[in-house]
Length: 190
Ligand code: GRF
Image (cartoon, rainbow, N blue to C red; front, side, top):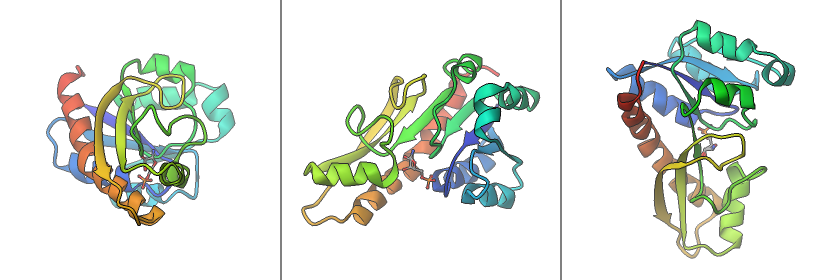
């Protein structure tokens, strides 16, 4: 099966996915897409010799070009890894039940528009939470609202900084995202 990753930034999760699926018999990462021509994830894709595509708002929201590309490359499944734009309905329909995302909090808390990256970690610390976590979930037309697939938690200590909380969350993401996606790949039909 063939996976496309959508990412807007650094792509550390994309990196883990590319490493993992290089050795997998179930699926391969066949394409990386980004809305951001400066995103470091594009360099990472190059390093793995995985093709990439950058699109702008017009192309993504007003045309079928991205869907056409996914179909032409025979993509079966979409993994969002730090992708910041809302997925348009036409793409959700084209890949019904075949788009997943990872979020750096235990949803439904600390989700929704504007809740990404450090915004999440700041809010979690400001609320005095003693636990943080991650959620892997299906994607629907609302930010962070699709059905949950997997959640994991970490402890927040009294004097943890934002950097520490972010680090603990990333460790969990890197540990679980490739594994969870792999288990989904075993279940879908080509
Ligand atoms: C991750 O924390 C993920 O949960 C969120 O965006 C971040 C992406 O980080 N959706 P990276 O680009 O994979 O390093």
